[in-house]
Image 1 (cartoon, rainbow, N blue to C red):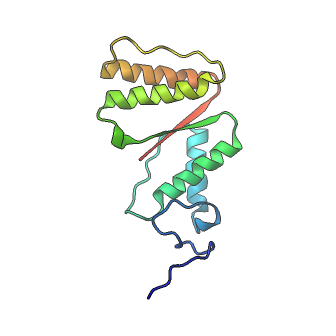
Image 2 (image 1 turned 30 degrees about the vertical axis):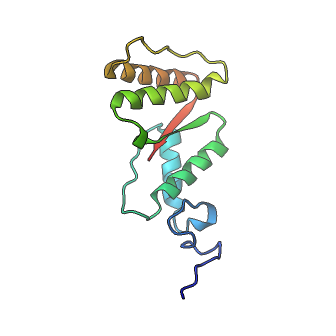
Image 3 (image 1 turned 90 degrees about the horizontal axis):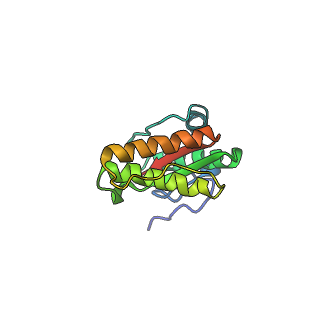
Length: 143
């Protein structure tokens, strides 16, 4: 009978689950690079690789570091499996960013009565532009 590893220092313990901290052995440069790209450039990244090699864990750790290092950084998490169109994606992005920042009393553009794909795209762009004008650094993670 094979024994399951139980040590928290073994990077393979808990295989298949999102891990963080010291258990992300050998990933420091990758995590730092992702966090820097998201913070400094407010850019987009794609983390691509084989299943179960730690993509979600690395991105989760980078986002965690961003949240702890900047009070003007917000992260929006979108589950793409629940969306059926680009219109829904843009609308969800706008809704989540606006909900997070309206807590601070900021004002954002309103959704048009008819939300076509183009109108949803324009709403998402204007929402993100307004967030940037106010000094916020939104990042979006999806799975």
